[in-house]
Length: 398
Ligand SMILES: [Zn+2]
Image (cartoon, rainbow, N blue to C red; front, top):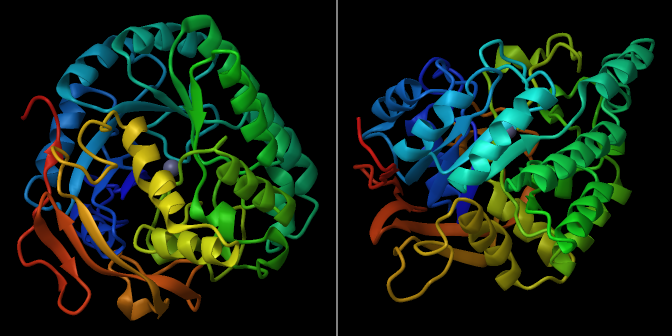
């Protein structure tokens, strides 16, 4: 399985996660390749120097294959070509504040400068699509509500913020010819916008994540900030709409958006959704979560491979090496028991921190063993391999 949306946070915020813990957890979840997001690490991956620093931090510590995503931030257009030549497999930008000061969000002029460059480089731009004006106005309206209620947080980030941002991304992708990819889609309407743009020739794709496919906003307990992410988990109409879009093939990719932090930053002590760090940890659990939900919906396991391996492999430009079991492809293999059952407990999680909204869930589908280019990375009986078999997916090595 290929997961193109992981926040490893090393170097700089290694106490949040780290290459060793993230890739061991990934291997335990059947993920054989991940792409690391350019932010939450310090430095953020917005220059070649920062990419090299990250590669040095990762080298020798990866139980699976790791590739990197470069950042598009205000003022770094001149660094994009060098980042692409050094081997980043995609770029990422935010249209709203990202939550960390070293990774600024972009505005339309920044995108009009960066997207033609990316079109020429032939790499996709992954976009966090929410518009700040819409979020700010909704947040002002929501502040009268109880900040420990999930519904208050949900109201502060309405689906309209995603829809209006995606309309802008579609317009700019059409104008510049750049390939755009909407990350972590939370609203079913967004998928319809993306697929109708694609039908008229705009180069745009989208992904969703296990948490939007599993949880229901109306069932999130008060103060349960481990469920906080942006855009937020919505209600069952959106959840069902995302499943229909996957089934119909309009939506082709599921990735984790694993974004952990130290437990203290989740502020369970106050249970305030507005002060807690947003991000859901699920790297080790994504395949079982998605498969459990698929099983309930009567969907065959081949579709899991399509959405969690072939789809993300295409996005990462790895479709000639990964995403298929075939002669000439990398022997990245998962031995998956579709009838195995697990209950998510803290002591089985290999993430650096055991904070996740899936604790206590009974899931179907166990990863018995994971192989990376033919070498065993993980075995359910003995745990992660003693030596890390993963590679860094880069063109030039520091
Ligand atoms: Zn993310």
